[in-house]
Image: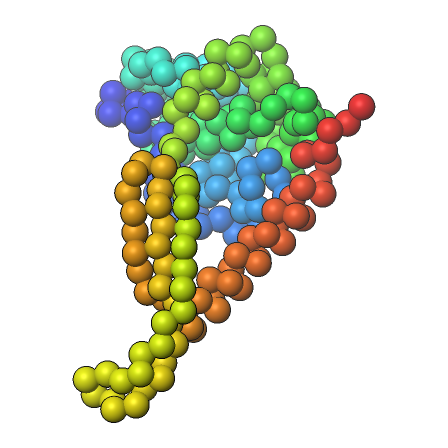
Length: 231
């Protein structure tokens, strides 16, 4: 049973399996982002019923997964020696994996331990477990975990060039006089591909609104102490 639980299974199965769906956290500025990932919320609920010894074994498996090690046998041993089901193991390790991965992406020069602990307290993670999480993020094991977490981060092509122009359709096959404006866009990406597409005015207004919303959220996030350099 437990052999099927591996580092590759540390995805979002937790939130789906336990019905949490998309997080409704929205605490607006945690190191986890404006919305707490569903698997982290599921883990925070489930970990309250886990003993300290079992938690530390799960945490060790999670760190090994972050470092790219094979964890199948370790997970199998935990399953055989505890009363945790395969589904419980998946959502616990999945949440721990996401939590540590996101924390390890932040530089220690700006990410303060007190802020990290406060965010975990808001998730109602037990105090003893918060100390163990902190020892991974801010302790001696950080360098090995940090490097792998950053390397394994999924990367998408970035925009290298962007061009646009406004076009007006004077007539169409169905209308003799249309005079409908639209925006023609072309994006060149870092992987060498180019994408050309047409955007109706209504969709462009929607895009403009969402970009403004993202910029506002970024500005709000930068004001939080988690991203401020402190002397």
